[in-house]
Length: 276
Image (tube, rainbow, N blue to C red):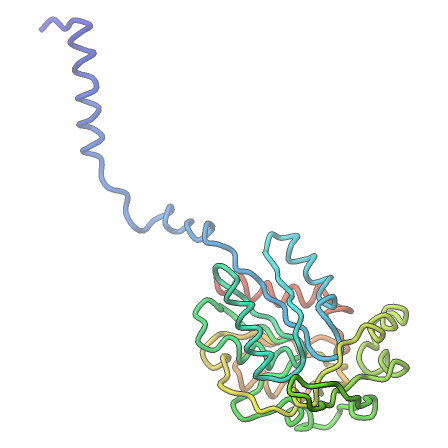
């Protein structure tokens, strides 16, 4: 049969359409689907500081997380009361889009344990030299569960006004004792700045009983600081094992986020990668 150019021009599109229509569907599994996880949104790492410090203590950790492309948020923890601080952190999390990895240092561990309850976007909890309380336990009670804390010998009590017109009591570490007590492995000049900028914690926050614990339903990681004079390493280890946390230990002071930010970042990244 003689095919003119016009016949070919009309026939080719129809033939190609037939070939396309006959092509098998891309299966749901296979290399394309397996690589799709690379395109899932990266979780926001939310860093919650504890008592006697502020969000700047996370600076070295933040730089390392941002360097590898993770969004980071380090809000100010009010340190006024466990239920109030937990409610505040919940409001912070509500403004974050997408998945979250929640990190708490020291008393901040108690705050993240409560704030993550019922929040399906929280993929992992990371405890950095932190309290991991169960329902009905307080930070003060857990710190005293094992010997080794010398915090009580270094703090001063001072008063502050309450919203209802009453007076509350808060604790602050004496500046002359801050370096040895809180940050022995931090250069003295840096520790002096930390002492001057420390955030006092209300005694009510340390004494208030915790509510439900998110670590019972959310996977957790823990960094244990073996030279810690605030929360004895034995207490940290006991809480972490009870929670079934993935445990890393480091010879560091309570200010491990300042003295060993690379170690802190590595533990956080372990949690992030395990949940992606």
